[in-house]
Length: 392
Image 1 (spheres, rainbow, N blue to C red):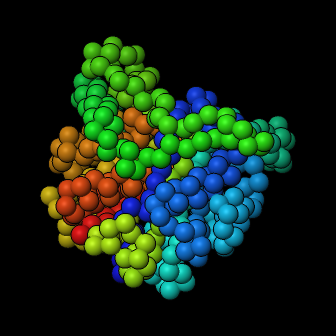
Image 2 (cartoon, rainbow, N blue to C red; image 1 turned 90 degrees about the vertical axis):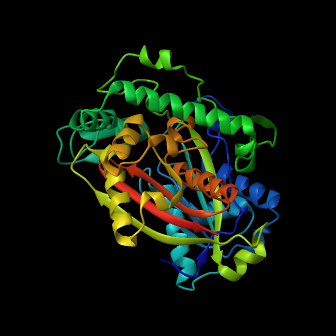
Image 3 (tube, one colour; image 1 turned 120 degrees about the horizontal axis):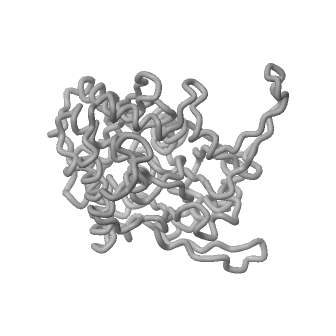
């Protein structure tokens, strides 16, 4: 898959993901912030902005002047280049990387920037004329109404987790254990300094250039206890406030290049990161937690690889139920995945979520000396996406 495309090691970076309404990110145009932040990250990584030929951005929540997409964001970066915007719910962060790989592989560009971002704080409300409905005009709160109502089923996303838990007769005690283990993994990675290699503290300025705040922590990540998790009230089957993620704000960026340019731009040119394979599936309505497992199984069947061939396994898991079902369907120990943290703990800004997952996974693979990296997740009610990368 995409044999010409490479991800140059060490040219990536992500903001921390503060929970909604807990940081200065709630007060800025997230597209402008993302463009400025990518310029900052590239500078820290020793990459000149002028190296970029094309930009693919990804977000899911409307932001001010979104009509202008990449031309606006690249101007905020300080480098006027073409590009486009992509959106596929929580799969956006991985799709943007894969599309960048396609741009490189087909020869359209040698250096493509990927920039994903979202702000759940103060998300906009849209007013839609609806001639077929008796209301004639309907208002939609973009974040909360979409997560609270799947128009294909009428169910909320939390209901999908509960429905899947009932289908697989999932044990609440195991779900709590998964959530506790995931939180332990995150804080161990944070305390070890691992996250300092991928997360970049960023300043937020107002229109006058004065500081609004510093984004330097995953505000919302909680150091939970197992007893505390067990004491939480169920909101749906096997779902509590501690076994689901939370809305947050943030951005993440990386580069996709040709093989030659990767060696020139990487801080360690001997490291080669390739695209191996990708797939997507849809399952039955409101069974989102099982979709990623089906996508991974399809990917393994297609490539002839097994879970034992994966050095790093990392996913987008808005519910701990997702990981329990994945472990059951793939006969895989959930303790062996998400070693450096995951969205269940550090939050869910949609657009950049899987980009940060990928960056952390690649960094972990390099630390381990290379190998296959499996990244997967869910999106939009009943979709699963999965991709394999090879680090050598």
